[in-house]
Image: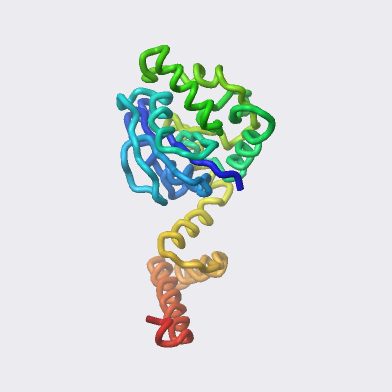
Length: 262
């Protein structure tokens, strides 16, 4: 696997969300930031530029100077905490980003003598916050821009990408979808519900939180809950599934022996 570090940009005022803490907004039961972190779990160092908040896995935190100075200032702050030859750069509001897109970017960035690779959305627009950059030219261009303009604050990302030799990767119809408005959030939530992914994602998240490895037969559990709800009373559904789970845990512990049970 190609070694890489990742910088996730999680700052910004989120003005079109009324100033809400966008990276913490939940889609399909998980915060947007956690969804992005799940897509790059193979990173060496994970740097998040923005205000500290709970995350699904350990990260290094930093802030741009000045705070609110924009994506180039945030990128300049984040790259100081990376050491890998390649740096994956992501915004924190990509609900459909998956490991396959990350792998495609890393592969494209490793081909030829280019300086990285970025995704293009379905309309052909470059997405510089869905990209892999070679660390040396990235640091070089950031330093040159800071020298030329006095700082990186307020500068547009196109000033960086215009100076780098970058391959283009088709992000497909959803990987580059970002959530700038509440309408975008609603659309992302609806798509996840419609495609039935939210239940599997929630079960995976709960298992990770509880530290258990277990195959869950969701059809059997849902049938059990449905029978209890319709055949007894609605509150009987969660209570019954809890009791069955408790009984299964007791039986498993008893079969394992005293030491394993403890």
